[in-house]
Length: 150
Image (cartoon, rainbow, N blue to C red; front, side, top):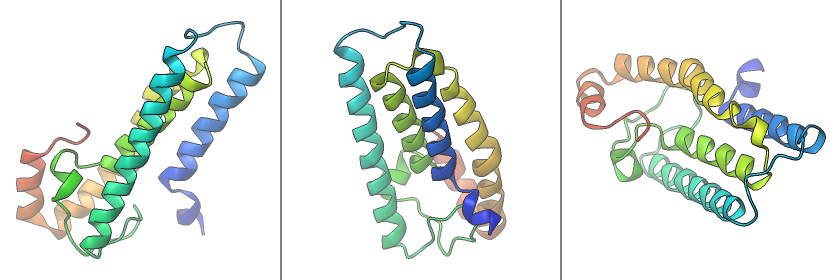
């Protein structure tokens, strides 16, 4: 049961809840500015949603799992995975950044690198170990060709 609660979207929603709570209760009159933060925030959230859709499409096309705690059936290296080994985690960080900007949650800016660090330590390193074990040479080649984030 715990592994189904311990998934990246839950951590993303927790970070979003903290940012919203901070803005709602402790904004101290701080702001990023009138329009540019809303526009950039919207673009980042939209870009994140597009990345998630592209990654989910590729994983479905290769008939492998999208769940981080499950053993994948295939190593996906095509589509958006040619640019980033972790496009969904990248999308999560874009969504968090976009919402922090959109909500003018200035004091929540440190939450973004903390979120990225937590996702990398808690999910990415474990997944990479699993991929290394299951797809030895293919993953080693993929790891050299494609960056972890961007």
